[in-house]
Image 1: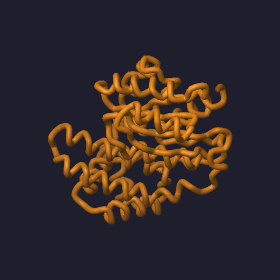
Image 2: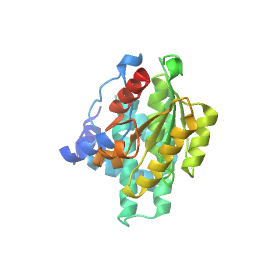
Image 3: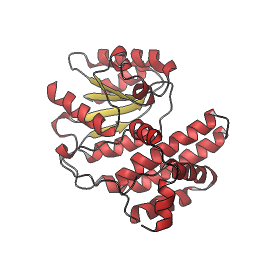
Image 4: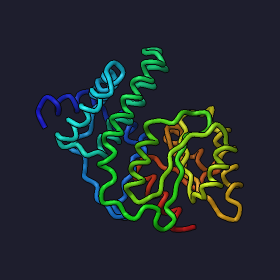
Amino acid sequence: MDVSTRDALVEGRGAADDHRHDALVWSLAVPEVGFSVSPPVILPGMGYIRHFADMAMKGDAETAVAHVEKLHAAGFTAETLCMDLLGPVARRLGAWWEEDLCSFADVTLGCCNLQQALHALSPRFVTASPVVGEGGRTILLCPVPGEQHGIGLSVVANFLRRAGWDCACDAFRSGAALAGAVRRRRVGMVGLSASCERHLTPLTQAIAAVRRSGGDRPVQVLVGGALFVDHPEWAMDVGADAMAVDGRDAVIQAETLLAVH
């Protein structure tokens, strides 16, 4: 890795920011299910994350893809790029919009470019996979009804598939629509993400609907996202079986739920 790239990556990184962006991304990796994880070369700092967010918002998809390809060639694993760069960049774009520093159109363009960069990394996640769906590893990932499908869930889906899970990633307008999908697809686990407190009630209602949809077949529910990073005690309040503070914890929790039910 050249010196300028390394310097840009560490610029402005603070311990608090590092812990927060590590915790908010559901990047999943568990050695126990049959694949190895390469450690990150060095974590992107907040200065570099802001730089990449600005580039994604003002550039095009080809530029974003070329940038992550260059970083991958420099030694960054796909896991590191998704967990420590693309996820934090997406959240940075959202924060800029909330602070009125950019328009909704700017954020939409930036996230579209990030999706293309993530798509370019996806083939790196599907090598050396265990048998997909083996042992009941079926899961449906979605945001709480009322929130939009985001970059983070796409990242989670990549890691889950690599870990051998039969994983679908979708979005639903209501808890009833989610429950109907669970019933039709006969999935064994649902992963729900939530980012803000106003969605606590619809999340609780959605989980209750999922429970009813299973009938005699129990459906396990895992929750994550910024809301539960800040308030982990709310996971049990909404009726979830488990929550995860980060991606590795999420897969451990999912595997544990699978083993005990």
